[in-house]
Amino acid sequence: MRIPTLMIFFVSLVCCVIPFSSSRQLAASSQPNKLQPGTLCARDERIIFSCPIRRPAKIVSLCASKNLTSERGYLQYRFGVPEKIELEFPKDRTGTQQKFQYTHYFRAQVDLTEISFTSNGYEYQITDDYNGEEKPAQTTQGVSVTAPGKPKEVNFICRTKPKVDYTDLQAVLPNGQE
Image (tube, rainbow, N blue to C red; front, side):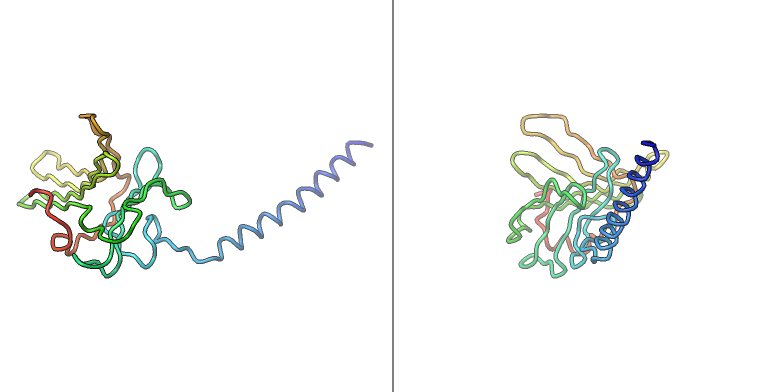
């Protein structure tokens, strides 16, 4: 006699809980997503560089305002997942252009773009490197981080080809080779 009562209670509980949680998920999914798919950049921002990294399963994004020039707009590095951005540099969106360095080297079979910055003594370098002189050709895309006083860097390699737009960065950011 107790088993059927217990089963009825369990079935009643499941019937009540499942529709409630499904309706909550539906309500959450009907809200417009404020980020561009697969990035940490808002829909009203320009993606300079963004990709999911291999390990840990996070996203690295370099986002900019649509009006980015050397005098106006902002550039911001973000690392984490959409629900939890672990690092956002710089926090203040004024004068960000002077906090990043841009380097681009190009010749036949070689194309190297690097965007770097320093935060709390840690050195960050976003790299988009193609070397067609290697056999087979080598492509390295991701971010490397060097801790203060440590000679060895930690590399976070892109899992997929990154979304990139380096248009006009040479005119916007200081040259890293100076």
